[in-house]
Length: 245
Image (cartoon, rainbow, N blue to C red; front, side, top):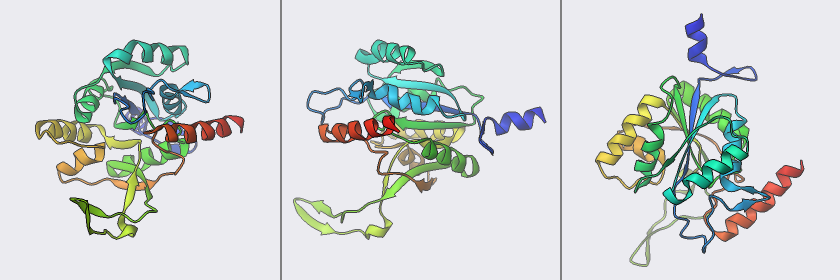
């Protein structure tokens, strides 16, 4: 019985969820932010990295948090998280030259007892508990899950300035994070992506390189990614509204 309970892991409400490590990726250069560093930018009074970490601190299934960031931010980020009460923080590590290398550095610090690993972009600081729990729940059953939302715009493939094709919009989803995986599966996929020198933009892409697929669960428009100053302004408004509830 003890072994069974250890496999089932943490309890969230009435749902048994496996023990999960969270890797928060905050190693980007913020090149489209016009000089604003989104990792430590203030979001309704709190740094973006702190809000992202708080979401996983509050989730019962998450046993630990590993943050991957730039060398020049490592000490600052660690201090922000410790001062902010992130008691699940295991390590703040320096990222690599590519996303795959950065994620892999985070994976290396994950507790081997955790059956699942959730990989989350720091730039999505407004992720809800519902999305985190649902993605973990589905990944526990299937091995891999990612939140996504249907695209609203018409998407056109452009080559040399000319539109050459228009994919069916009903089949297109914008992927979000956290992306949650069986721990052994994502470790193998990320090493494979690094060996292939694949320029992945999310972590499911590494899985797909090995011929595997992930289940898509319902994301949210509010789980937006801060990429530009406009995104930061929108996120500030949402954070202030959420804090006032």
